[in-house]
Length: 506
Image 1 (cartoon, rainbow, N blue to C red):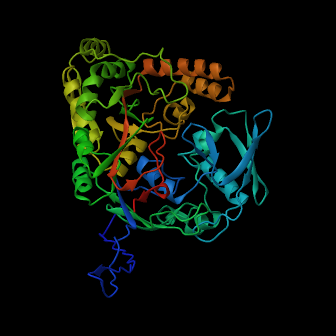
Image 2 (image 1 turned 45 degrees about the vertical axis):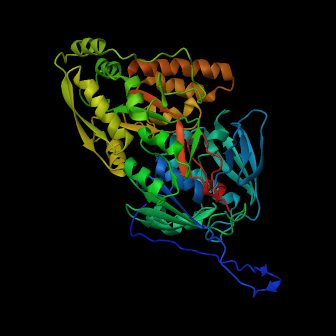
């Protein structure tokens, strides 16, 4: 979200004839403007967008914007089930290895092209080659267009989370993608309620209502995702009216915002995990004992109080209660600095070591400072290095780091964690590799019996906890903030929402 500031002032003046009388004497009819109609919403995001090509990015910020430009074949509903989006309906073969989707007719991309089964096939083939999506696409053998409005997915095996995967696959227009080439990420075309207008680097992304949207025009015409990297500045902008919606403010400010009659809070159950990422291929984190020591050395409960004002849950593992595969039997690392010191001594680091710690502004920076203090108690000296989000992601992907902290939001199934923990996972930035874990992921995704899958993932998560390739810190409670007169629609467990479901009170 980037560039020059542009103020929108779109006023619809309604002339209202008013007739008044006094002492029986009539007066001339008068006109006066009605209350101006709000036709702009400004949403604050904490980092600039990387790319609006779903094949080449998967950051939370980019996904916030994706939801408004693109559509998927199916969506989640509030009950956790699935509802049609670009699909009209679907059927599943008795053996569970093929799905046939009937597509809605007359759906148009923002470039005027009709959405057809050939676009679905193009998207699936491209997603299979994407380093960001290849892991979750692995169960899919192929997709075939039976006619312009019918597409059949053939799977390699019956795969229980298949529909969940489809909620994250945004449909692309082949003509737009191939025509733009490497510039597509800056010129996206979808079927969504809003079309891309411009990206002012480092400042904002501007969208405009797509009047040809198949579900009808959205209530609000203009959308601006404004980049504000500092959470304190976000709070000030929200309270002053500079922005209308915030995805986050300092935790210490939440109670004050709740007391502000001009503002509203929107709380929801979230599947987000904040964790410390360790580069498992560099010393000393190539030693499991050191990684376990780091887990014991961090006071998660204190971290939750300081960073979140208590609005979070101590993460016992990578999974929380909203994710299929979660087990109460899994117990994480308790805060025990003495145990941490013992493990460091066993690993050959009785006097600790020095390490760099990459982080980003806002709550992550605050968390890094708490962790820095925790680690100092076991002889580990950390130097905090601040990064902008895109630079941070680039360093994580390339392995140009030793230690850092970040957040992640995946789909509500343990299988999605193969992106992060499988040897060839697209987001295996910690460079963790355990053949047993790889095999358990492969086995779990092929099972259809719920209890068998749960048992498989419990075993997998226990191994991951013992290997300690990362440090699960906390699952934070989802809470967003807005102007009081802004109606906000459904927020899913990933924290994503659609501006098309938002409107200003009249």
